[in-house]
Picture 1 (cartoon, rainbow, N blue to C red):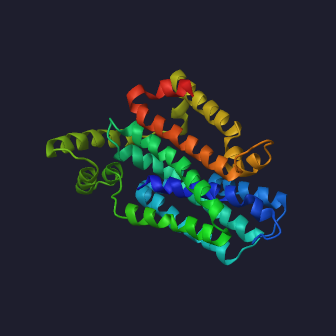
Picture 2 (spheres, rainbow, N blue to C red; picture 1 turned 30 degrees about the vertical axis):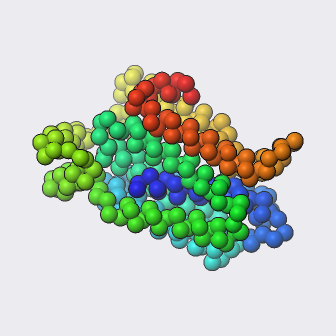
Length: 304
């Protein structure tokens, strides 16, 4: 259910792809220039920039679950803003609001899933979380070409309802409960996520207690670069993140339909090619999701 929050995050980007040309056309519900449209697409990152740090602090005070859950209503409000007051300024404001919600999801979500997953499934579950991003794109790619502006926006809004209904009933992570001295809630949370015997649950609970005690020890940002190994790992991570972002995947996935429209001698409708792109991205993510624990993270990373 937590992964549905990523699906809803991706729809904020995927929503643009099928209707971008329409928004620039004479029949647009939100008349705008190409410059305004480009800003409306990219300004979402402004909201995504400001929310992760507060979200990280909130996860330790109110819990991982409430932070993730808050993104659902925020996304719904943002779509209602676009539907109710269609204008360039309102679209920009809604996009910033979506970016803030996205920061909540991508800060608290990986922490939550990492803490509820068992040792044997942690890699798979984490991969599914990030692969849900491509599922969100695929849904918008597949539905958008066949709906007009308002039905498509209502459809995207409605995708948040299953997330809220399913995730609302899940407990917070056992780590958070133990950090706040609520051992019984931690045990119930662990029982919710595990099909284990009472003895196995107790053994894992003791391991989590030890981890929580380590987390409570004083630490600082400087610990990340305290040793050569940690500095090397951080450098690799930053370079990989930069390469991924600078490779153009963001622009390609958002403007896919328009890119294919400009492709000469394309005998297949651009909307269909965009759907195929979404399928390829999603299937590729699925393969990595179900092989990360089997083959290991490093080989997959080297291949990619």
